Length: 90
Image 1 (cartoon, rainbow, N blue to C red):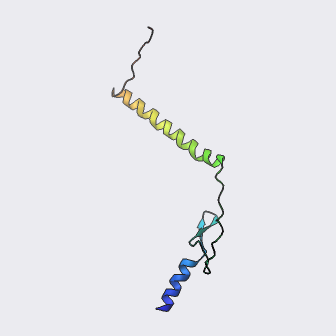
Image 2: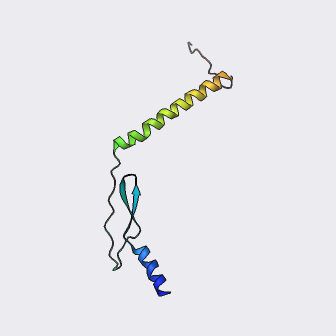
Image 3: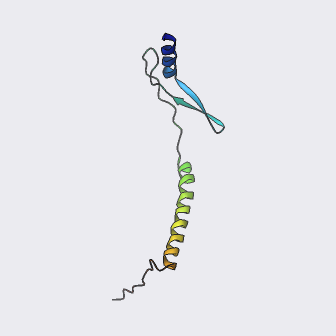
């Protein structure tokens, strides 16, 4: 019984578990303090720059506009929604 509890404690106290993501090895922290009670330093942050944001947002924005354009054409073709040309020459 004691051996089981020791293995469970060691598992939860481990400082990091390596995970393989693509070709990089990424660290995943499972504890916030050491066995002596000291608080561990903050983990490293991956920079999320404007270039990465642009690389994600631009393709999905483009695909969204294509879908909405095609759906609007479909609605107009079936006379579900046809915009009216109102002249406001008052």
